[in-house]
Image 1 (tube, rainbow, N blue to C red):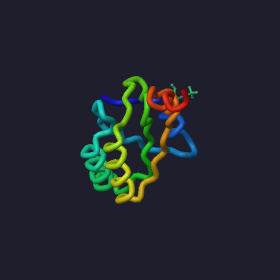
Image 2: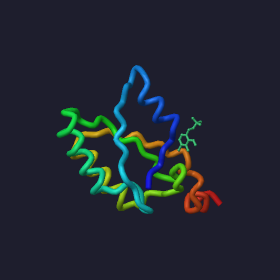
Image 3: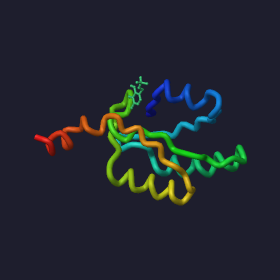
Length: 105
Ligand SMILES: Cc1ncc(COP(=O)(O)O)c(C=O)c1O
């Protein structure tokens, strides 16, 4: 299972960024921390380069609709800290969550 915002992928692959994209497996709770950890290790061993940032859509992923659980966010954040990685959070749909809407009603 995976979300792919195709425009973002094209943008990151294009000049001047020339990013190498490493997809990370997800389940219904969001990005899988064990897969993220493995990707971080494998990527640096195989390519000799460190990952620079994680791009993620924590709420209403496209096309899966997945919203990361609080626990997942914490585990991912801990890994990002350990590997000194930026998190680029595309949270366009945060305010569409029913629990957030309820706060404003
Ligand atoms: C979370 C998220 N970010 C970015 C985009 C891309 O937006 P745009 O088509 O305005 O570039 C989408 C499009 O569906 C999206 O779902």
